[in-house]
Amino acid sequence: MFFDFHRFKDKSIHSYGFIIIFAKQNKKNLKKAIVSVINDLVTDQRVDKMCNTLASLQFEVILVGRKKYDSLALPSRSYKLHRMRLLFEKGPLFYAEYNIRLFFYLLFNKTDLLVSNDLDTLMPNYLISKLKNKPIIYDSHELFTETPEVIHRKFVQNVWLKIEKWIFPKLLDVFTVSDSIAKVYNDKYNVEVKVVRNVPPTRKFVHLKSRKDLNLPLDKKIIILQGSGINIQRGAEELIQSMQFLDKHLLLIIGGGDVIQDIKQLTSDLNLNKKILFLPRQPIEELYQYTMNADLGITIDKDTNLNYKYSLGNKLFDYIHAGIPVLASPLVEIKKIIALYNIGDTIDSHDPKHIAEKIKKMTLDPIKTNEWKENCKFAASELCWEKEEKIVLEVYNKYV
Image (tube, rainbow, N blue to C red; front, top):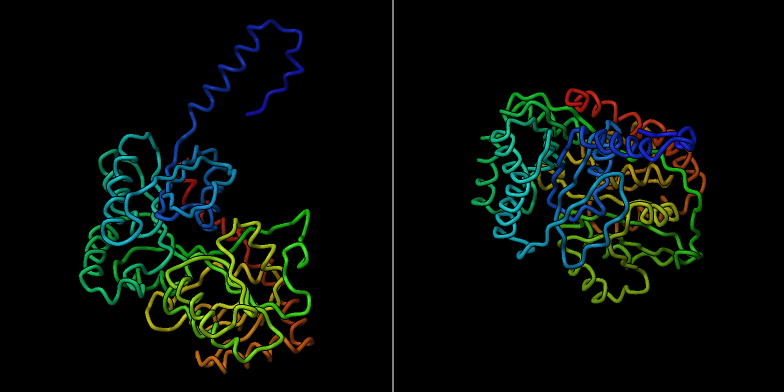
């Protein structure tokens, strides 16, 4: 609500008082939405987009997550942010502590809408939705019970499966990230799942930084692997090893994850420190600056579990919007996008020499590179949040 104060410049102080009271009352009447996720909030692009969409519908939005020891400072957003510092950083006690803390946070804070992101926040949201008789929206970013961190720990997997089987069939509004994952959930629980891909909004930068600004070499082809979840079975180790066979390239790894320390050690063991540059997680806008200065984007998760097999992560779309070709694993959903828009190539295996040959071929062919870059422009215009958001609005508008 906006007011033209010039219209009231000759009015008494009571007019101004009325305006202030009216504005406060208007804010008081806003519906509230609490969105919860288990990460540290700063780098999660999907949740940020969802919160902005809710805020655009005049919801007062609070995004709840956790604060880690190495968390970045909270950025300025169009909605409120709340991070909880936990005693435990990982393992069963971490999940138990977060779920208990989240339950009581939701219990003692007024809300008109609950939005749960991923299975590890679903139970407290569902319980509160029943206790308070409030609607719940579930956004599943992955096949949580099929992730490599879970499938080899049968007891842990069974616990999460029981929670999922108990709650999922009762949900009315569910989002996920790919057609394949939606089909798995639909077949399993007979619930309609809407697909909202992790595509970014169209971005226009006032100032695009150069390689010099970012302290990146001018005489190397830059390969980038970005992601806040650089974990096991994502091909990072083989990508590191492939740099042994590349002399005109720099590998830029931005982000964090379970294997970061391991691949840093591998880099040192193979004496590749001059060929590989590690950077910590970056705010979204800063990450894009690095990505747009790269020559090739890498996403080579392994087809070792259903979650990776059907994944469609945001790094693929980040590369597309940055205008750089993509080298990827031939996973179902990713291969479909690459083939449809002709924006890159896929590997045939995770053999380091093979990966190196693919990188050479893709980055040292200027004609093909220009073709892929032009195709990225068209793909970016199709695969953007402005179009994908319409699916989200169909659901959110029911609760305005």
